Length: 505
Image (cartoon, rainbow, N blue to C red; front, side, top):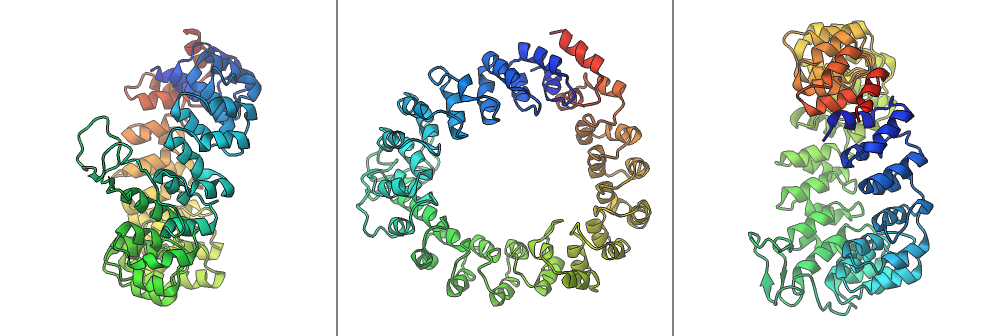
């Protein structure tokens, strides 16, 4: 792979005539980068697609090829890409529905807006995976018909389709009113009863671990139930009885539904599996009383997920922030806090509360400035990236807390070039700060030069437009191929260098 040319292919400053040069010699790797160029013209896309067949699909998905550019008989994969984008011609579906390659018929079946006769062909396809692909995203009418398909794999796909009518989903979940399935992927290949060994060593075996069939297609039926429970179109009354089901996966699927009655939530809150309780904790269906119960759960992940519940009371959230590792993130409840709540949190004597609200990036200036003068380093780490802070405020944070806040100060969008240079020279150095500086829009050449000494930041800095052109050119021969590509893609790479690199082709 020529990493210099791959980088050039992605360079936004590459002139059109040099793009043409690359197209003329492109291999699959270079073509992949060219296909994603924002400024690629339709004419260039047509030439590239004719030269490198592998690029044509990407170009089609990007909208750079039209139906007039494609012959479905010789370019079926490109035609499928256009059909997937609803830019192909209806008659292509009839041709592709008879394609001998099963994977192509599967891709066709996943396309929406197909003519009815094509849908009929796919619904009666000899390969069950094609029919299942159709069932996964088809219309309510076709989904209703396929819900009675004799193969359990098709029914499983119908159960995952949100367009399937609620009554049909309920029937699939309970089995009531449905004729029994005759086959599944397991008994298609093995004589029932059969349990697939999780440690199966057969190289030609693609059955899922634990797949089984005793004649009732139980593993596929279980998957179908799981899909139906997760499907928001399945009626609530059809799923609530699974709250005490012995299958962990079915209870787990139930815990994430936002339409659960309070009594079902209460049962799930005492489930023996912490994964079930964690999904429930983040579910906006739970009421305040249950939120307060889950806030005392012994499992850390349950408490962490509860902090992400958009309806968690602020006092509970503050307690969780002080006792649970939540991470540097803006929580939904903080994002929706009212102005009065924001002010109350910012003035709280509890640093955990101040840390939470400091994650917002739209604080009133007075609130932002008060938090920027906080004495707690965790609060400062949260507020340091807030736009609008002055260089003096950022330097004060740095003077007071040093390495603890260096990376966060470096991530402030308004950090001045001089400040970034000082951060790059900070002793002891902070590796994460180098990466923040290397991608900062205000980074100067001296700051970027310091970043080049760090292996990870070097790859980022090599693409920064403020890097001096001679240094960019030097990086084209770096030992790290990612640095080479980044340097070649740098928009400040001199035109003369670009021209020279492409003239050697």
